Image (cartoon, rainbow, N blue to C red; front, side, top):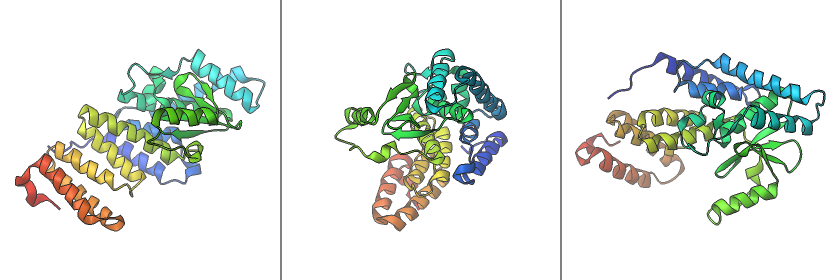
Amino acid sequence: MAQTRNPDREHFRELFISQLQLPEEKQDLARSALYLAGEHYPTLDVEGHLAHLDRLADEAQKQAVPATDQDTLFRSLSRYLFEDAGFWGNGQDYYDADNSFLNRVLETRRGIPITLSLVYLEVGRRLGLKCYGVGLPGHFLVGLAEPDLYLDAFNGGLLLSAADCRRQVAEGFSPKIRWQEEYLAPCTNREILFRMLTNLKYIFIEDGDFRSAAGVLERLVLINPSMFDSFKELAWCHLKLGERRAAAEYLDRYIQGAASTGDPEDARRQVQAMWESLAGPEQQSDLP
């Protein structure tokens, strides 16, 4: 069944693309995250939620006055967001898609590490706080101006050192993943949005919501067109939806991408196996 056009969702997609086309320093991360959410909440009030972030900053500022040094600012912001405002990690329903949508995190004050970090980053930016996103394997933190200090927004503003971060990765992923100092490097806006969308991709696929998963994958491709596996995943979603023509088009794009970077025959074998398992051998005439 073909997807029904939704002008509101298409409008949010266009707005999302317009942000991606801007240089990094001119992108508005909160606005981009709200445009991302708007495809799933077509009546979302972007300006209203941006004003919500402004109000959070105003309230946090009251606690920081008259001090303006970075140490006082981040401690005041943490106290306000995690104690007074009640933002906290949603450990009870971690894989709820709403945890990945900034509008819902602002409304419920519950989220996952990356969206709670996003709230902290955006409110902090309004206060003049120097902070940045840090994408560890399996976790997301806020890097602070003070050297060797990282904030865990999912766990109520818990402060970590670089050694704590290394230990956390080792305990969670060793020996599969070896520590790299690059894990502590500041994330770009694109990297943050890509990670948010990747979380949603896994959630929607696990839930069997292949229409939403396809929409997420389309935006992942917009952020990083060189991730050719996304085309294969898009084809898989469209096959699950019974949309063989769209699936064939994405498989062709996957093979073209594989041909430019690796072994096209291996890619074609993967495609054939997927096509047979989902579409059935009788549909092989559609195979690109």
